[in-house]
Length: 184
Image (cartoon, rainbow, N blue to C red; front, side):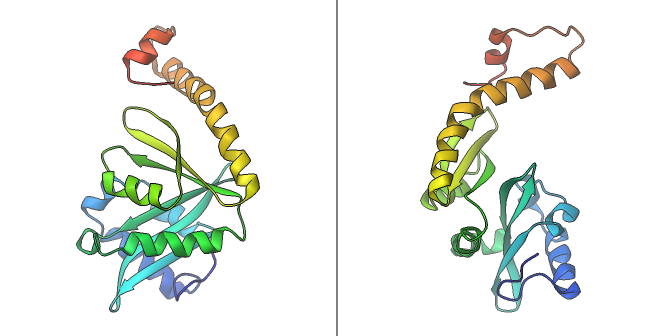
């Protein structure tokens, strides 16, 4: 992991991140990464208020795709911590990636506004989540266009495979996909 503003690399920093993640309560509902996966991230930045870690953001790779994660403790929300974390991470990420992606719960309107203001574009959605992409370079702009074109097809295939693997009837129609809330 890359060290930024005193966060990560040293064993004490990792302990602080673990302590931070274990202290999350309400925030856990929207932050789905495990502690292990968070510690394996390629980049992690933090924001402090006083000597307390108020939030972290980072990028981890999944199948070669850089995925952004961000979490701010509830008592520090509304203090622009998320905005500062996103700005720090974008500056670092531009040097390494062409784009970043994330998923955000549709009910998390504050996070959606943050990401849209930060330059993310919506590529797809289902009943629960919105899939967003942030192009960081010109190649990232092309990637955004391709993802918008490919996302519906890839998502349908993913949902079909998931339904087939969990379904006892092993047959699915497009109508049943639509009825379950999957939009194209």
